[in-house]
Image (cartoon, rainbow over all chains, first blue to last red):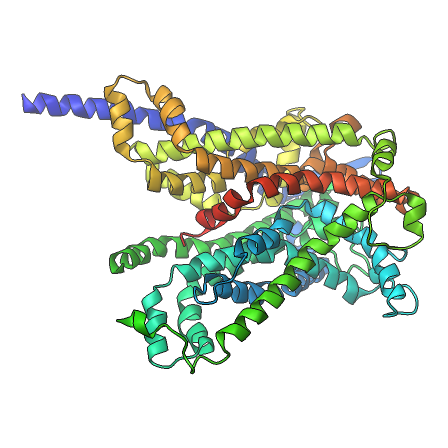
Length: 316
Length: 289
């Protein structure tokens, strides 16, 4: 009897579990149609010569890896990769330093910062702003006749308006500043959550042993924060590779001055607009491989984390 | 025992008061750096072109209504742009949250063949940027005759791996399987259980993710710019880009600022109302802190 009961239960479970597929179906179908198939098609396209020359369409002709060879020999991709990296790092270095500092302060119980809720709200705000609008705003504010120049001249800092967008350093610096402003609040909150997850008794023990706050930070906080720091660095790098809206709007897609702010995705966007599908495909595949490799690093961390988590809970 | 020693310690470098003062100075400086631009934007949106050309002032003027009026009667279809942005973002927010919760529910509650594989697969594809599949995407949409329609910007929102992951995390901590069992015993169908019992329990997570999806769709520029070609379908970011490529210094600058302001301020207002939930939500989703 118990046997048949079991069987009936099993059937019931199987009957219920069939619903798993039904509930998964919308996601899987949509994903395959709108993401997976386009990805495969992008890879496929990268092996064909297919572009517009005037009104004529050349191809598609099978060319194997020629697009990749051309892309790398041409050298532009390396230049744009360099630009992307420089623009990312200008924003990222201050971002990680400021975020570590703020994360430390916000989670320091003895510092008892008042209005920390207000500060968190304010520093996170730029993250939600439309990047293209923010970039447009900077373009108007820092224009030759814009309010920043008029402010600087009237304050006597400079004698005549400074042309920000003719200077490589100034343009790159402004893009870095925008990226910094848009992302440091987000990073601060992530790091703060990480710091608050550290066992307080570790700090107390260190203090008893006479470690000052700098020592506590470098010897306890930083090493224990390593997984989250790596997560932050890699996700930010992946985000940096996707940098598009800010430089695109700021320079109207030209990457001026002297192509110093032309990023990889702006390059891809150019190919997509001119319908150069072969080269665009090859560029997409290269970007896909780079981001894939980077996310593998995070992936390995995500799988290791649950174990650590359990240990931490057990400790408490 | 350790608690007795947490008082002021002469060895801890700078005194706590000095550190607090430094912290406040830095925080106020950073807050200023975050808000300054939006303050100028607000001021300039209220000034007329003539006033703007006289140089910068810190006090608002009274031309906001005039600028807005000129803007909506100008050459750039701002009102329809706002409507399009609103429509697409709302649809994305609804689809993403509903179906991500559903997907997370399937993985969380049921046991079926291939579940582990599907879960790892979704995690693996989470980081793939949409830009790298854009080429295949627009070619496919072209083949389906969906170019220059809103569908390619709305329907793909059903599959959102990042939101799925957040929902799955949230479910693990808040949705005990016994509730589902109880509903089954009461004779509720699976679909009904999901809609009437699970969804309401997930409300806080859904609210946070709805805001994030809405905002990222509202701000999205890359894909809409590739898909939408006709003026009456264009969203705000595309119109801003159009404004940028027009010979824009000949424009009425009051209108330019007004348009930027109207793309930014709705989000700021929503954010101020809901900031408490949003700031809490960020840390919850990304890292298991």
